[in-house]
Image 1: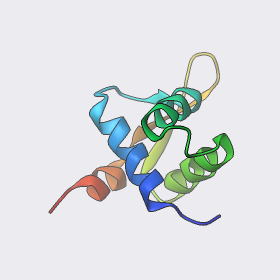
Image 2: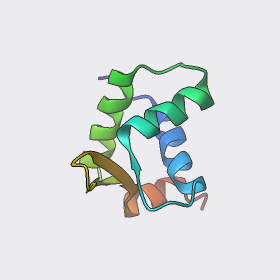
Image 3: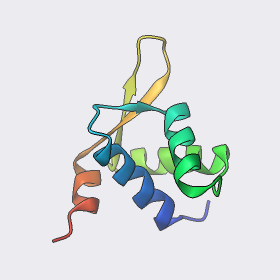
Length: 83
């Protein structure tokens, strides 16, 4: 996988600006598609979500319907911090 910093930034910023605790993978993909005009495939988004989880930017959340959602982890907040 080639890391796409723009996709990582957009994903983290999206989670931060929506002011919600977590967002499931499908809704994240839909929101990113709207924002980017369909620039990213579902497979690319999924690979980057896994990458961000493995590197401490996102934390997985298991929803009631047994789907995976994602929330910002401390590393994600640090990534977005302008200082």
